[in-house]
Image (tube, rainbow, N blue to C red; front, top):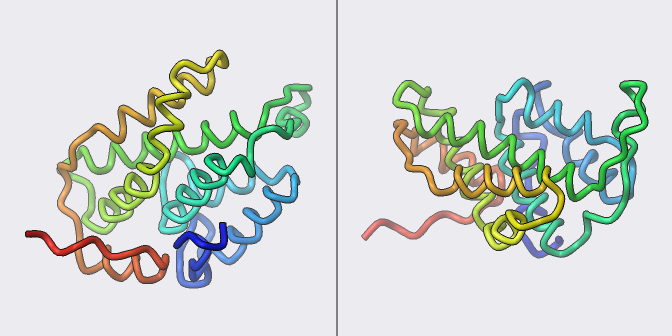
Length: 187
């Protein structure tokens, strides 16, 4: 994942649910190392269905990690903290996180009452999720219901239209912090 723009993120300049997002980059490395930090990661980038600047980078990172199969096979005992023995694959957890991000972003860009800066974040989240479309299309037919439902949600969110007004200057600034390429000029 060293070649993608998501590896060049200035985490200290981005915001997450708990302020700056320095810890988010560390959490992603721990996820790759097989540590169960998913609850913390969800809390930082999708807290109570709210997305943040750091959510954009995590969305791109997750899509790439799934595409390159760096995530997927390990089983995570997600119920341990809740006192149950539920175990899920990283793939299911990642699809659920991406689905939550997509749903929140879709709601934001579909509303005319969304604040412009939040709409800019939401539009970039959807842009970061778009390269995973082949994964989501394949996931619709996955035998695991959670992956199938998450994939359907992702595809539906990506098919939606942008209704909210977007703060273009803020979005360009955020792209720079993310190391995300600028779109080509409109013709």
